[in-house]
Length: 332
Image 1 (cartoon, rainbow, N blue to C red):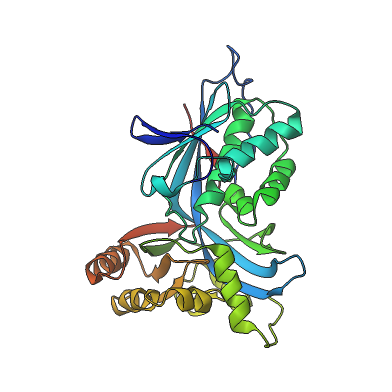
Image 2: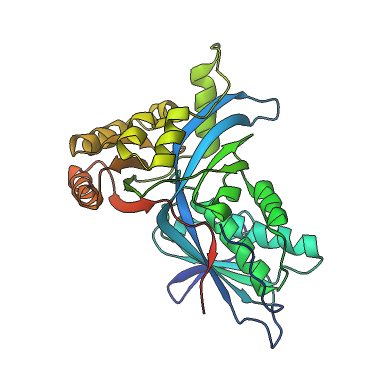
């Protein structure tokens, strides 16, 4: 854990330290909202095509994001200084200092408007931590939207997306939700149509995988080879557009799966357990180690989740549907 003193209060760790933006009162004033809570979704990469490393160390991507119905909630409340607290599964693994993307989002937004980032951000975690489902990115987007409303800033959506891109490659999609193609390093989004609901099971592994380390392993495995320019699969985009689960299952692809398996070989057993239980397709979610299983319907999701849990190859299994809305302010 970096920086700040940590203590336990009310069951939460604490340390010092796809909707249009909704306006509110100025934080800390009598007529402003007392708090703002934003719900923000996890994501699965139904395609992640990775290009060769660029001179800046990043990789060009063709990253087809799909938001799923696992959510974190970020609550912003006026405070005398910027603080972050967290509760939920694996909350002890979430940094509470300025490296947390929620804290950085508050700082960047406040700096753009020339105000102090005096806010308490409370994160209620339900997205797996360090699991390749953009939980940290979701918290950054959630905090950004919550602070914008709490402080009554009415920041244009385009500016919010600029701040998201500054925070990280996955953060813009966490704000937008639904489905989108991310290009560049993933931050340049083109929203995609989705013609129906898809059902998923996510197997949560013990421990996390560092995204930079997984990309480094990709570079090692592809060294000396001709890495093609990343491009979205027309078949996959058509499957999303028509809501065709079978076609989507045949088009799922993740160029980071091989490096994730190289670093965590035990994930192969989890993938096999899910497909043996009837999943239509299986892949590592993003940089892992969470694995994702596309299934036919809700009943199949329950069966596959039960089989994965019983297999002993993962810590737990969660069911979800997609697409899901992006960062959304919840009613009081």
